[in-house]
Length: 351
Image (cartoon, helix red, strand yellow):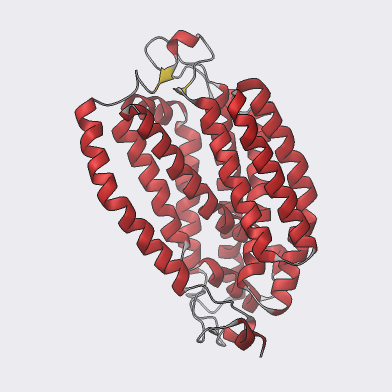
């Protein structure tokens, strides 16, 4: 396998991991007003992602650095052409992160409502923007012979791109609902699974339309398998939500997100940024890559460091695997992630 192909696959995997992990905490943020009934329940929801959301964003940084180092031409064209959407992504990431930290610093209902609104807005905007961005990358954007983006923001707001955004919003909300069902107890858990069951059908329908459109317009024969996997996983997740089997449901949405992202990258290869102006102007894994020596050094470093990152994050998820309920939230406003000791078993949580 060529190193450029290896790095394209590796970057694809990094994005798959990022969107699968960050997808459910986007979903939690979007569902904040629909699942919780009071501040204590909102703190329960935030506590389910508090130990992991910032760790999930490490994969975004890693994917961005990977593109910058392995495919600098791709990085340059992408960040110049998608400047405003990516600027909005950064703003939304900052607002969302600050909101988690600030919401509990003042004993004021209005203060907390404001920052909760920022969590909801930031999560929804991020879910929408990632879908719009990746759909446009796969479909192709105006790029001239000098590898410069020649379109505008409105170029990205096309039917296919917007459908991609709606798909990711619904998919991440469904993913987040089942995560909450998996990580909470009592009425919050029941409410979360019920919302997941309601989201199942619209998510399946919209995602199916987007996946088939992607496959017919940009896919390859082998990527039909990814369409089938994503569809089967979403149907399984929907059925599991109806039966209140949130573990199976969450696994289903995780597989669906991973398969959908793999479909996008599989449809893209060997291009990294197709040109809708002229196919000859497209950026590919070959004309956008770094030198062979750079890719060799990067590969060695990655083989050493990536297992460490995976091991640490896996340990983090294992440590914070226990369910959380309203009984674990101490009185007072406090920090949103302040909790009493979580139960070590499901039986303890139910007692």
